[in-house]
Image (cartoon, rainbow over all chains, first blue to last red; front, side):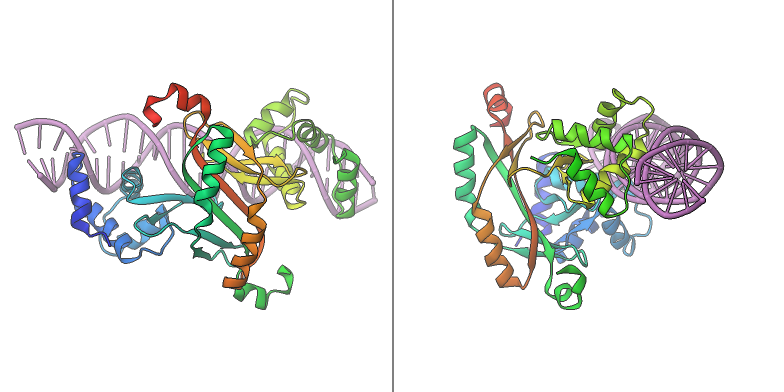
Length: 147
Length: 147
DNA sequence: TTAGTTGCAAAACTTTTGCATACGA
DNA sequence: TCGTATGCAAAAGTTTTGCAACTAA
């Protein structure tokens, strides 16, 4: 599990500074490693701690952290990017079309698949993303509409 | 291979009308089933045929066709949605981070994976999306930077 | 005839940027 | 001190919406 000091070192190594604003944002993700939040979501959360923080700062910090591969920038097709802490095992997402919940699942199959693809198309794979869209347990129970 | 008449029937069945604007847009996708175009891209293409068409009409038509599952709304993380004709075999995408090219590839492994997931999480899968990010043959050849 | 459709312009959203000020190391 | 970072406001880019005029069936 990463600690804020590790991240501070990573920042320093590239001549970035650790500011109070960055610290708050990083702390938040460290405490909520399972969340997939948009810039706006993060903004609202960190405002609770420092009401003076600006939205642009949040955007710039998220971009910085994604560049450093501390966060992962994701897209769940709802018109905005979301960020999650990238210190976890590889996992993928089940996206519920009923309630927009995002459920994580782990899977190992894809590494070997990536190799096959790479060979066949002369494509150097550096990342991949697998998403299943459907309806979660709750929604299938309520939802005659969905089935 | 779908024909425009089939689509016209699908529209009529739901009390939608076949307008010249819609026809032009559908024709374009029928003729270019391999393209992954944004609303703006489509707008520019159809303007060549009918210069009076409005961008809002393009957006509304694409949304309609996606609802009818004639087009598929996709996201390649470049900040806008793209649409492709959904009459083809299942396939997935290799997205080149060097030149933004999108290459299609086919794969069968995922159906069975979907079943496993569904059972494990009580999740009813209705669609899925697999994307590999990396560098295409061209970019790996030019690109010392990428490797 | 009339319900659905269009084009335009304005609005809504998310994200980026310019710039003067503030601040971490 | 000095280069980086911040907050604000404005700008940019994509998508949506209100509305009067229009049109397919």
